[in-house]
Image (spheres, rainbow, N blue to C red):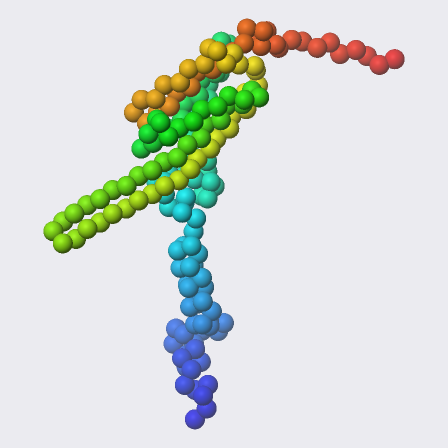
Length: 166
């Protein structure tokens, strides 16, 4: 009896379909498991989207009025003292760190889960901002930053005349 007669992928049935290789299938599954295991810790730290998943965290809303910009950032579970707000070169940068630790005890069973992760978002602003009239509030996981526009920047838009070439 030849060894090929003992091979399951040659003997018919579901494994015997043309082009099926159980070793390739096994290797692909093992590669997927290792990829999941060694994924960046940041992708597992936050319940919401991260850079690893193709979306930015934290989520932002930016609204502009004639007088100011209003930036709202969703930061659930983040302590306000762990957030840094910086205004430099007409760009607002929000950065910080989320730390979470949960412990459960049930008789002889102990369960501890920790997650840590850093975040940073930079929002370029098209008009000049008055740094002395900026304020930030943090309530129920929502950070609201109000950036008052510089009075000279409010009148910055103007029409430019097109001159015909001679």
